[in-house]
Length: 193
Image (tube, helix red, strand yellow):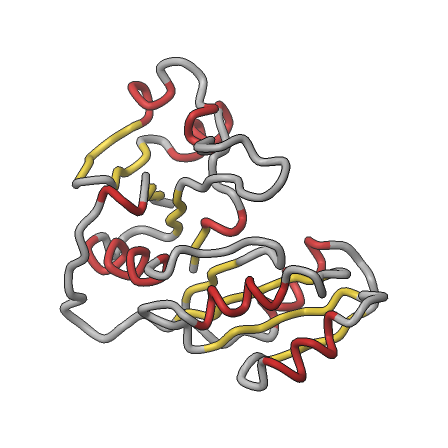
């Protein structure tokens, strides 16, 4: 498997995809997410390159998560399940997806407006890649201002595993080994086949 990394949204200029857009399903596991899921879904639906499908799995929430999704987001596919945990809910969402590519987003996360566009452009340039992931930053009351996940990389990780680079994109050399040393592939920053 080949992996590519998008290092930061402010570092890359947009380009045009030369062929048909990728078929992307966005999957969102949700448990008691009523407080956040509206903002999450608005960030997903406002993408400059929208996914062809958005699937939310309500993982047995006790709050109004499912009702909010049904009421405010009729274009979103809502699947209800018994509470089995985030991993199972994400798996259920993937099982209900019909896109060639899967883009997970946690129910309390937000995407930059060009998140899917940038991933699609990257994957169009590197058709042999099976997974792409991007840096992320924390926000909210408990977040450390300006903190980005890649800042947690061990010393020399980038020197050892950073391969071919193009702008803010780079290919990981020996992705499996690289991810054993440091795992920056946060769920909401992934896109995979």
